[in-house]
Length: 216
Image 1 (spheres, rainbow, N blue to C red):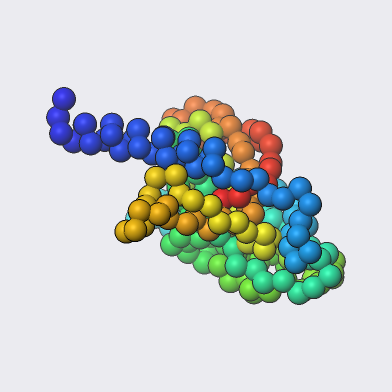
Image 2 (image 1 turned 60 degrees about the vertical axis):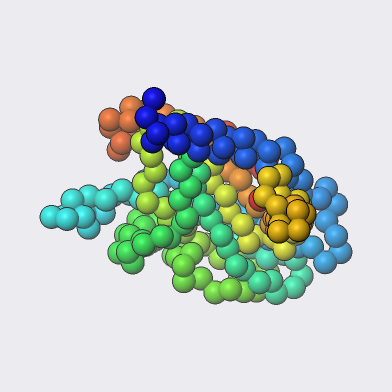
């Protein structure tokens, strides 16, 4: 077995072990929030795909997106600093909005003009959510296409709550030998199975397996 193959195996095992440790160690959000904790009300559309002819020679490029609807019923103006990632069961992690051309958002907005006339792009949204239903925000979150070998994905959306917790990292240590402290935020997790033949990407189907709040 070559050195590169050994390194790949060791790195893969390390990712699996670390992911397992973190999932076991990470706490769940509080059942009864603290007096200063808030979480906005969230609605969401299941992810869809869209192809835009922006590749070399006009080649179609595929993106996935979801639309979330946020209503601030907390009784206060809240800060909104989102972090949104798509993670596959093949250990690919894709940050939302990474190198997404503006035309992709424009085409999505045009597609959903009837249902979401004031749709906003996550990368351009204001960092505050005002109080009340009149200030509800419809926001599109966009990712480039993910690994076509993936059989399941999870979408993580942070910034919808100010609930946080700090835990000890299960592996990493400071210079003094103490565990590295890890800052976690209350995060919405959406889980999907990926159906369809990987060879026919346009026919890929996402099957919703549930949602939950996690500390991540």
